[in-house]
Image (cartoon, rainbow, N blue to C red; front, side):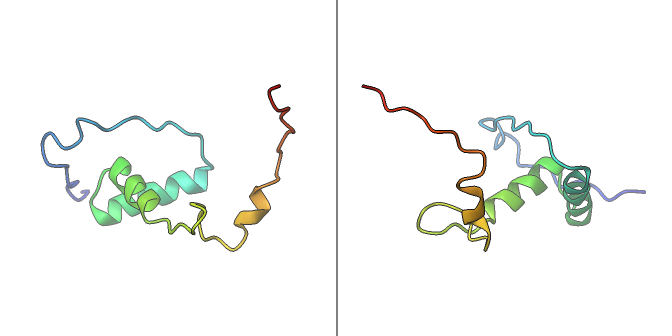
Length: 81
């Protein structure tokens, strides 16, 4: 028997938006496992994970390899004349 899921207070999710992304199966399993352990919905668990990401002064995550993503797959964009 599964534990009861903690629900949001009525009306507090009225302004929520849908975030639909494709993730690796392992990432989805992590969210599901955490949600189960915390007694939250998958949406609430994912929201808590996202909101707990620490950002630097540039507004980027403080991950040690974050700068490796800056140039990855970037295409040159011509300036408007």
